[in-house]
Image (cartoon, rainbow, N blue to C red; front, side, top):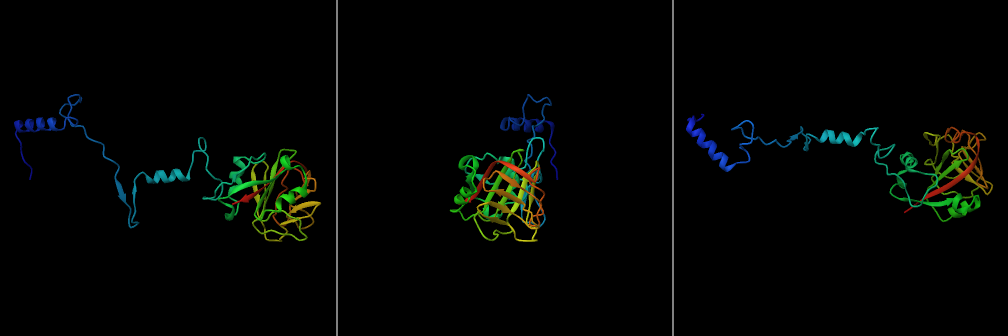
Length: 255
């Protein structure tokens, strides 16, 4: 039941409140005798039987983690969520941030979390396939071959095994070809054959079948060719089937 107050009693109560809470009842307020109401803090809401309390602003925050403004931001990774961008321990003449982002989603999980070491570079070691094999001898880890041709096109291959001289083909289905021509394209194993990688002192071949190689490089690391092959069903990696190499790098994982 409500309690009735006389006009005098109301004035008395108001004077009491002003004395004890001057910040809530100020004379500067345009509407006299009107209290300043404090803004209510955002309330938490309980959602069903999820046993979890979330703030009402959480949906917007979660949305921001999955979306971006194309004019002001860019996604952290292209490809699979949770994939870590490869980190290079040395400077690369051929790979930049955009290249690494594109390649990240196609690298096998076993390579993630490790730095990539420059094992061979024509700019550092000269142009010799024998030297490339010699530098690879101390490694037992996947390698990334990157080529820039005389037309400034960047392409290459990821090999599950380091390059070596071998009488037979080697490698696994993790091996793939790629190109930036100019958009990124990755060509994964089709399962039609196992002609992943083979090498001798005259040339290095990646992918094959039907008399054509997905990627072929000569002993001087100067002439190369790329054709569609059954191993990867790839398009030619360069703008021409036969190309000249300007720069070449081979990177490998170091733990």
